Length: 148
Image 1: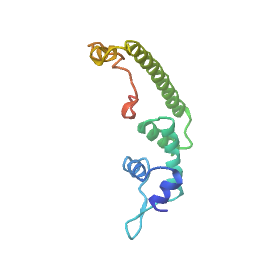
Image 2 (image 1 turned 90 degrees about the vertical axis):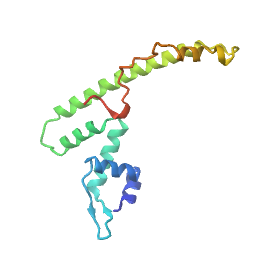
Image 3 (image 1 turned 120 degrees about the vertical axis):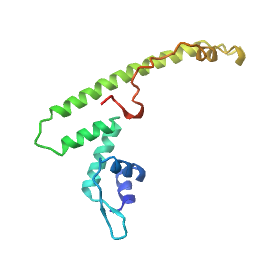
Image 4 (image 1 turned 60 degrees about the vertical axis):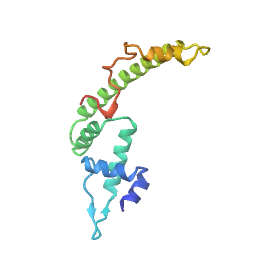
């Protein structure tokens, strides 16, 4: 099947499939005489696996590790369990960071008196302070990183 068909069957964007291929998560497909990429069921299953991992907010490095382990089915599940346990810990930390962010935003919102003008807006004053509202060191999963 061509990339457009694969994208439709997996509900992924063509660009995403090309990116995952470039990142080495998907093996290079066969090329037709017209230089079209031709994918098979193995590609389809691998993309579905990757998509499911991404829906759980796993990083590309985590997915790469899982794929490597999946390609060696006789190994123990120990490493997979450790990876998922680590991901769960990361999610718990993110939830705590988001709850802290929510509280910071609520505190900031309480500073505003809707009767005042913008020049005296408590929110703008709070945002202009030299004190950060959240922990700048918190891992917010930006760029899909876990520190792995």
